[in-house]
Length: 236
Ligand SMILES: Nc1ncnc2c1ncn2[C@@H]1O[C@H](COP(=O)(O)OP(=O)(O)OP(=O)(O)O)[C@@H](O)[C@H]1O
Image 1 (cartoon, rainbow, N blue to C red):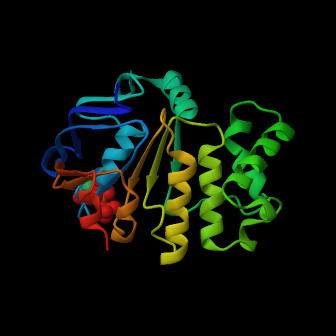
Image 2: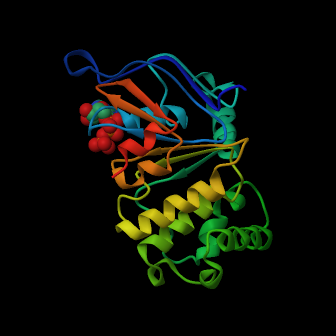
């Protein structure tokens, strides 16, 4: 089957002249449908840069990034924005919920942006909140929720429009161990489907066991790929 994501000789430089630095040095890799792919590696090795390219938030200096059979690095303007908002969901370390909106209203934001009526969007968001185990928090404000619950709202928001690619940057970093495990279990359960893919940047080796495949980065390159039974050997 075609990969969910394919990076072809991807290079990324930042800056100009004397301050120009090469952050990605020719990444050739893919991400498979139906899998949770973890991207790991030391601070500064280029993980956030790589997922920003995959999510279409940055463009590569050289090479191509293909997402769901579309060369996202060649898309421009409105076509790129439309492709991203239809196909890609994001979860960040900080949940970035709007404090004056309820959990359901927060989770409904991508649908409202896509032109849904408020009532329909909030109804669908409430359904997604039930899936992530927050049926009793639908009308709660973010301040009334724990960190783990807020992250679950952020996951519901990222999945409410059913994107085929979910990209998460350190989703468990702000959570205690137990909430982090719950969030990973949830991502595995609700986001990993045969026609979807999940990419997670993490420093947290307690969550490695959730990965179907681990891409280890070092200094702007994928240094090693671990999958199958070998994943267990990396888990804490
Ligand atoms: N906009 C930018 N301009 C210049 N340098 C940048 C920019 N963004 C990132 N960098 C540099 O690129 C390198 C890789 O950064 P990146 O954030 O991708 O690493 P990372 O592996 O995600 O690190 P961490 O685990 O600490 O989040 C770092 O040296 C960083 O300083």
